[in-house]
Image 1 (spheres, helix red, strand yellow):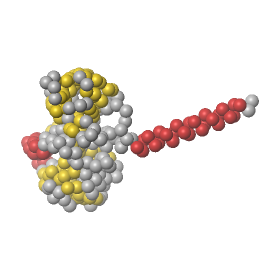
Image 2: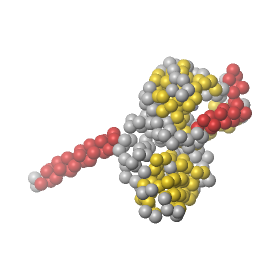
Image 3: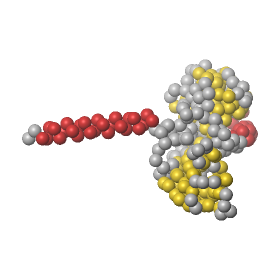
Image 4: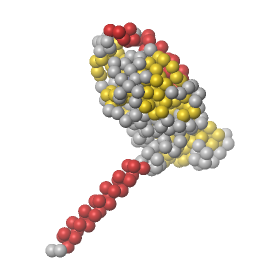
Length: 306
Ligand SMILES: [Zn+2]
């Protein structure tokens, strides 16, 4: 008879322990290396995969280790991704399921050159899953309606693409990794199809957070300022280069506190929230690009990075 209440207590105690352990895991998740989801061996090299499937807009991490690696690259969806060397920790590559990727399985190849003449290869299939992007109507007021011209949109993306395609082999972010720039409610998500004034279809490559004008905008990670300036759609805009092909952008600012080329620490105030450009209310539009593609910035800080 008395064994049952005791058993109950033991179960309760175990449950409490489990919950405590989970909380700790969550708190440390971003900075503690998770177990790889798959480990492959080929020609004396080891490839670790840190993702299973990829959602449209999601980034996946690959880790290659072994002796005498001279160079390595990933081929995925017709694109080539570089592996970046990290002192004493092999090579890392960030692969992207881009916003427009069709939902299906894709072959992914890793090609590595060691000091022997043989090319070492790894082959796998990667499933891209739907992100379920929303389709929404947006009304742009008459005074800003000239900014829905598709040519202005194309020109602005072309200008930004020229910046985010520059992949530097140095890693500029530090042990604090990536965090959100401001704490404020989300008002609009990544990947949305937006029909402006019922005529022009555009994509939303970032996230919007509503905040009062002048709210401090902080760098999501340490890096180097790659662009500051005024753009038609994004208004006052900053791009920070975090190295390894990772960039963050901050739009519609009321003020800019940094200069191009400046070194930035994680969390440093770089500007203020505003309403400049094609904006209809004070908010921060922020966006993340990886290896030349706009990715879902909300998934990015959760990604474990070395
Ligand atoms: Zn936005």
